[in-house]
Amino acid sequence: MRFCLPLPHIYSPHAADRTPPDPHRPAVGTPVTTALTLALKDLRVAGRTRDTLLATAFFAGLVLLVLGLALGGDTAARTAAQTAGVASGAVWTALALAAAVGAQRAFAQEQEAGALEQLTLYPGPHGALYLGKLLGVLGPLLLVAAFTLPAGLILFGAVGTGRAVAWGALAPVTLLGVVGFAASTTFYGSITVNLRAREALLPALAFPILVPVVVASVKATALLLDGGWSPEVGTWLTFLAAFDVGTVILATLLFPFAVEG
Image 1 (cartoon, rainbow, N blue to C red):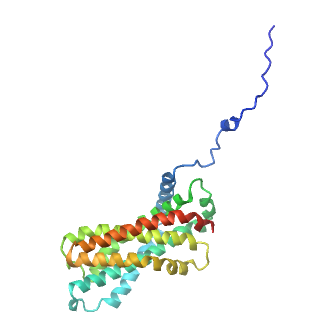
Image 2: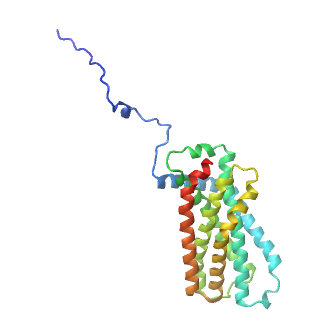
Image 3: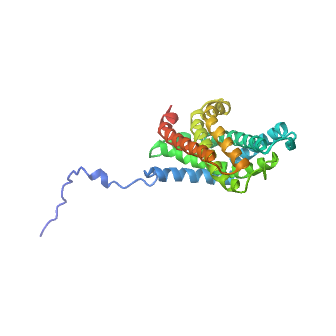
């Protein structure tokens, strides 16, 4: 009769690698996957609750209304260039203030739900969390800008002051300007989220950085409304694109220090 003895356990340095994965532990994904996952989560929450979208739209509309009452006056006495300048300044001021509201709400929701610390523990680079939050803020803000821009131009009588080609060129100006607003306010929103006076500190910190975006956006919009496309408009668009790229790269690199501080 032959006996089959059990073989002794032989230690293998790769034995730990054969441990079955924990199904409750999130897998480490690429930065792009992490950013898109977080952005889709924020967009689903924004579409389900609509509180951020409504707050941002209400604030932008309120600013436009106040500026319209203060600067409306006798539009017939203004030239086309003056009307375009006033309308552009009012619209971009409203969008800058609305961007601060949207970014503040994006991080406040995580803190109120007690998920901010868990979010920072998500496997993967923290810079991807910033990109995800940026995309989550950018979506509702672009939607608000799509209604704020024409409403502001109509309110201030700027419709019809320029050539038809200007209206198509307003799309890249709006996109680049809104991206600049969202990139800056999202980063400073992560810094001020744990502070008591975050509603007041966020605009105070972000608006000095937003001044170049506001100036460039107002100049490009006013030039397009008044005279259509020109090389000067292209210069302002190049400046906006460079500002957006530089802000996103710098904020992505500094975001881990902002959330851990």
